Length: 294
Length: 294
Image (cartoon, rainbow over the protein chains, first blue to last red):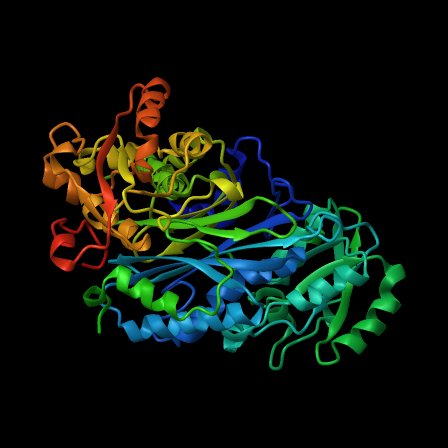
């Protein structure tokens, strides 16, 4: 069977099932593991962007670099970890100009500096195929502030940061991961479950609900829409890189009030709640977002 | 200017010069950094293999996976660190068979299991270009056992493990990194400088000498040759994945004796010594090994 008929989720799931007993604690968005002799947890994430799949040869290489760094950093926001170190792999056609590579690298550097991440290693290779930029991030999270997709409770309010939809019109190359917001959230509130929205609410919310063993209901009319976006865009476009998280409804008033004070320019919107496990017909109300290999 | 005219070393050096003040302690083979609240050091390394550059479409995918995992693990041997966690990025043409991917993954898993490394994360992407397997490893080393290329002292003996040359006849796809040997060495001896031989002694030894601010002399006739290899092969072929290290001549007798007892099947050979800094004519006696982009 060809890969494109399997789908990325299915392939990854199938590969991960083969793994021997893992020392990973949680690991939807990042791997969160013990580090010998430390009381904090080590957090690891790798991500890549591929020419002709995630960007075109005409895309400004500085924005490609920015995005390549910010994508895995968005996963650090998802688990409320502080990123610290980056390793970068550049796979570049030998005929590409050094100017292109230097601009790409400038984007990577600017993005890393935005979150005080040190680029501590690099690997380059030629290729006869498409350019690839792969970034691996390591960092740290306190044991009592690490969040996964799996801790949602029945009745929790579901919130999203920012506005959804239409990312491909530009945001997907210029977004700033919600690390500061996520760190603030876990400092001041009990966040039961959280993730970053990369494949679109329609694909990602069912994953959070499923990981928590629950269903969900959302108020589509409440979805915060990016300028020019419609509800379908907010559900299906993907690449929003906003936070989706679940907190107890008892925290709602205090959360909304202190959020407005702290992040006055960034909307925080209650879009629905976690419910008992859904039956299939209800869960299919949300269309799936973009999935690789399909 | 095109990349192929610059060369990988020059490109990396140029990019790394641009980096802001780095928190990296050493970093030729791996990045070795502080981890918050831990007394051991965090060790990071990423490496990739690219189809049509490092392997062909006809190469057994299980061996491709083995090599992709073992290459960065060889860098852990270089700094005497214990690898712990792996993140894997697979970039695969959508028309490739799932059988190919599963075999590749079996090779990755077997190699990781050989050193008790847990695969804790994965990322897959389609591509319209060549397949890429990128592996990022994190691990740990005690502060007093971390070794770099830079600590060699004038008069130190230079040793290599195993036999050199001819790796492309098969060893490059099946080698076992010298992690056990390296950990034993730093447990029982003061290793002043160490690296793994990936580009060939002719390219790698000058790097170790330069990092230590020294020159070197070698006895070419003493080089341990793989079956069928000649001296030129031992110097220039590359992909030996053996250790090259420097220790005080005062340790020579005890090292040779206890090595033979511990690793009876693996030769350890004194190939020369570190000297005062070389002038250019002498340093060019060694031909350079394989360098990407050239």
